[in-house]
Image (cartoon, rainbow, N blue to C red; front, side, top):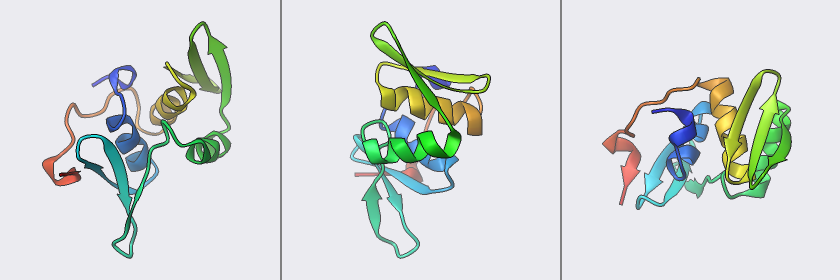
Amino acid sequence: MNIEDVKSPNLDYWVAKSQNLDPVIYGGRECLVRQSSGAEHLYMPTKDGNLLLLLITKHQLSLTPVGSSWVARTGNTSGLGATIGEAVSRCVLLLTIGNEIPDTISAAAEED
């Protein structure tokens, strides 16, 4: 699947994977990451400003509004999104994984 077609919570899931975290999709609506202690916490960089700031800083991204959308950019890589969170998440995925991800998330990564 093309990165530009991925939306939350799958977008959050793949960003977590790209950051070497252990994500799961809970109830089809939220991404959680498992810590080594076994505890889980919400991981939604598409909506969480603190996570966005960490990603923007780590990957040295700049943001530009384009009409009603946003572009996150670093070097020759840019991600487009309807929100800042989508733009940053897509740019991070393009930097770390590339333009394509698997169409599905394994059943082991989904919880009800």
